[in-house]
Length: 363
Ligand SMILES: Nc1ncnc2c1ncn2[C@@H]1O[C@H](COP(=O)(O)OP(=O)(O)OP(=O)(O)O)[C@@H](O)[C@H]1O
Image (cartoon, rainbow, N blue to C red; front, side, top):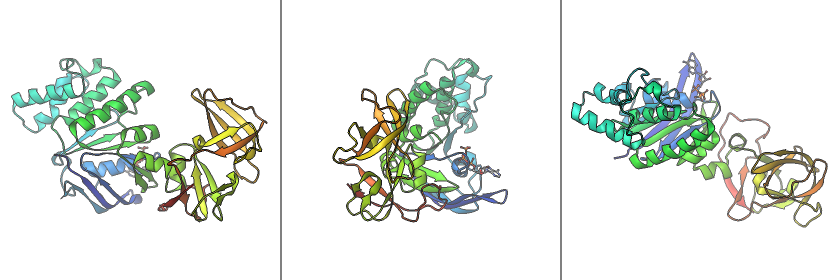
């Protein structure tokens, strides 16, 4: 049966410095939650507290309602997969996967059965007798996962599990990790600094910055309705535009019910049109165009807008050239809403203080 994780007001000081500040997070039973943030934001430290490798200064963590504080790592019922897999290179795959069962003094017959089941789960049933060294990076990653899951832990912790793989393999393994997690129903907390990985694998994403969680939400929520400029910019390209008197002036766009502050407009929510004076568009001049395969990234200068706007133009659409006069039109529409950001926020800075999102105003 899956269990939940409740982290409450966790603070960690290391070497006299605050590393985690009031981290509070609920991981629902059976869900896949990813901690996403830049290097040094405290992701691994949070994982280490759950694993029992780091003692918190204050706060608590519960697994299935039971406090983890004071419980030694090997008694926590937690499986961990590290970035470098930490497999025994000279032992066979089966010996590696069997290791946690030996440590738990499980009888031989049950060990054999569980190892076979775990290798089946990661779709490598034939490699039990092979040396770990003879396997590819992607296969070793699966073996590390099989080893972490073989004793059916209550919680699975994944620390940058795909970082050592090349891009193509990483994408395949994102799918595989999701499949294995759903199949076993194991509550999982993963750490990554890769936005795509977090958005594609998780039920919930917690975005960390400076030892704090800035926002927790579904991948769609954090991408489309970021609570802070930091979240908006960390999750992809974002135009941060001032809202004043119910209008996004830079786009000549009325926003019903919006409070003064800033709003986030993603590049894919803007369209370029040939006629600068077309209805519903603002005139702009193209600064530069970068071809990116499935799309082109176009920067445009809009009069009265401090920063150039970024617009993505899908492949197959006519792309203007630098210096061209164009019109820019908001095309986010539909179910999309613009997200309000607080008026005191300076979008050029990454705030350390988390700010909660005001409800977005529908266009
Ligand atoms: N034992 C320690 N003593 C002092 N400072 C530490 C210690 N361990 C980590 N830190 C510091 O804590 C901060 C957070 O580290 P942490 O590894 O949790 O970040 P992270 O978000 O996982 O980063 P990365 O993606 O680079 O692994 C960093 O500034 C790091 O230098």
